[in-house]
Length: 210
Image 1 (cartoon, rainbow, N blue to C red):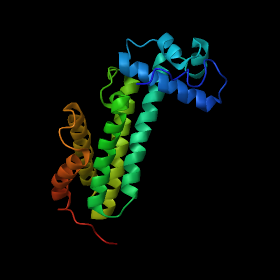
Image 2 (image 1 turned 135 degrees about the vertical axis):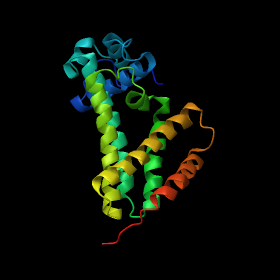
Image 3 (image 1 turned 120 degrees about the vertical axis):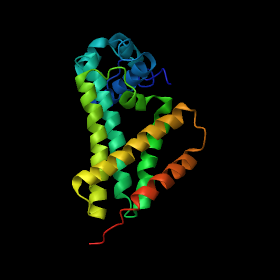
Image 4 (image 1 turned 60 degrees about the horizontal axis):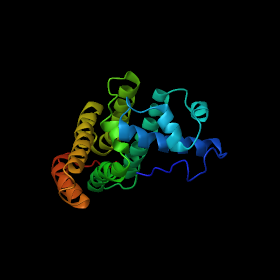
């Protein structure tokens, strides 16, 4: 992980508010992933970003608010990737491939900076605001898949959501296992293997052309 988040931009240099916020979130992510939420200190985050603590507090009133902003950013990135995968094709086997790729890609890309751990392996899961956000992104991705399943198969909402929960849950758990086991097979091979299993089930609900 980079230790020069702040120095790359110049200690205390003036930045547009959006750029400064992005800089602070990047620094916070490094500190939270390295130390965990409870051991992380705002002093450490400010130092990592190369700014004074008052500058940090201008953007985020406290450590929890900073953590939640970071969690929102990563959760939105995952959800957007899943939605884009569903919208990118009308072929349902390709959609399954896309959803699996979204999860595996997110876990794989963020392994170097630990972004996925903020969502799936947070040490702050007992904090209601954190738990609500994790549940929200899990539900939003499930609903995006369920909308597609319902539209394509004619199944009712409950049936579609159950299938979508199975699909997104399998994608998340399998991707995390794959990473924890240090990528025992190539990412594309892992996706294809899981895709074959899931497609055998979902294909029992054929597409209904309208």
